[in-house]
Length: 115
Image (cartoon, rainbow, N blue to C red; front, side, top):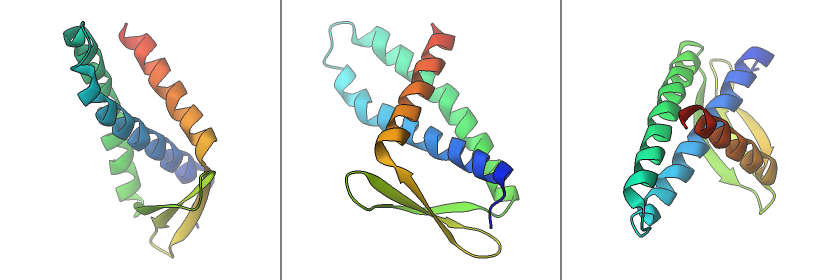
C-alpha cells in the first residue's frame, strides 16, 4: 500500500513524465516555425528543468521501492497506471482530461519561471 506522501511523489513523477513526453513530441514541429531557434531554446530549457525534477522524483521513488510498470489506456476518459511496490503491485486510475490539465498547468508554471 502506498501512503499519502509517497502517492504525492508518485503523482508528481507521473505529471513530470507526461510533460516530458508532450514536449518531446511537440519538439519536432518547432523546426517548421519562422522563429524556431527561439522556441527550441525555450523548450530545451523547459525540458532540462523538468527532467531534473523527474530524475529527483524517480530517485526518491526507487529509495522507497516504488516503480511505474506501465500505463494502460482504459478508454478515452481513463488510464490505469500499474505501480510496483515492495509489498504488492497497485493499479491507480487517473482521469485523462484532469491529468492533461495538471500537466498543462505544470508546463505553464515552469514556463513563467523561465521567461
